[in-house]
Image (cartoon, rainbow, N blue to C red; front, side, top):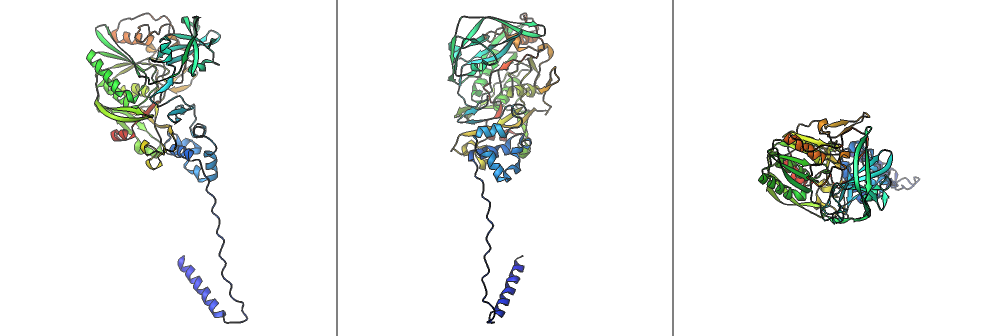
Length: 524
């Protein structure tokens, strides 16, 4: 190409020289300079929203299913700018970048200043709570009213200080009976409650009906900042020649790994022969904590435990997370885990474990069932679980470090993402368990075998403080272990379409807290 241009210029020069001496010829004119074609202006986009888009484009598990996250989407500068500009990061995230949000993806979230925006999960180590962990039940029998059962009360909270106890039934908020229109106020900043004097549940036809009478009270409840200890209760039952440990564990919180390990040291000292692990109110948490718990229970220190599957852009991250004889210890500072040390794991090395589950059991709790069951038998008691067999890790505005390094983040803002980035499977990579409902709907979740099923409506009138053997699931587990009857079940189990509603559970699902530690452990 350059040669042709050079020859053309030489010929043109010779012609000009040969004719320039002829007086009748006009004087040569300079060659005009061509006007350059203007470059289309590059559209300016919001820098925080561009972080959100690029991080999601890279890591989101369902990236290939979201048209606005396609690699080619940013090639149309005007369309890309229209998507990213004129909205807050949370509006972009929830409104344009998630796959079937609320259906397929029910679990991704975005946060600013360690506060979740428009989602139920959170990662901050201290949160504002009323201290009342609740389940909501339609009363049935033609009534439009609801009742709220207190699953447990966080010590030191407003609810605990007001004398509210596990098993209490709430019938009114701010002096008005609970309905679908107002029960959301139970998760507000301040309100009053009225508890039931009596509360019973009975089967009428093929459905549960709740009957209550009211106390004459209006108890004020307010949110306060509390760091909830997930190790809620421990007791040893000596029955049928066995020492049965009962542990209520309400969240896989990485900054409580040391306390969980210490709890198993106590179990070992107590000489427990069997374990009932209560995960009914545990919505998940840290993979590190979940793997450590598996070793604490089983004594296994080396087997592959869980398999993680990422999107097509990060297949090099696919692999197994193995068990270990040690557990890492962390503090959480400003919403970020900081490793402080490592401890040898205390283990009771049991041949089997009994796990209590419910419609609030999710993520790392479900992992504990399906993954631990490949190492020792796991028998579940309760009702169908959430079916959350996905997980995440935090994405920061650190584009030069694959969006994953906290220390390299852009500190001009405090937005960070917790989208679903992987699916998990047990070590055999078996399909996730599913449940088929009476209307033919099939959904993922863990359903105990028929003789171990307890419907949440059976809690009403039977659930008291933790450790009371009137608790239907605890009663069933004790009977399975000892072979002896514990107490009579007053309300029978029936399959019903009645929906029990959970409060917005304060959990972050299954997540990887320490990326570098995961990569160090990972096996292909």
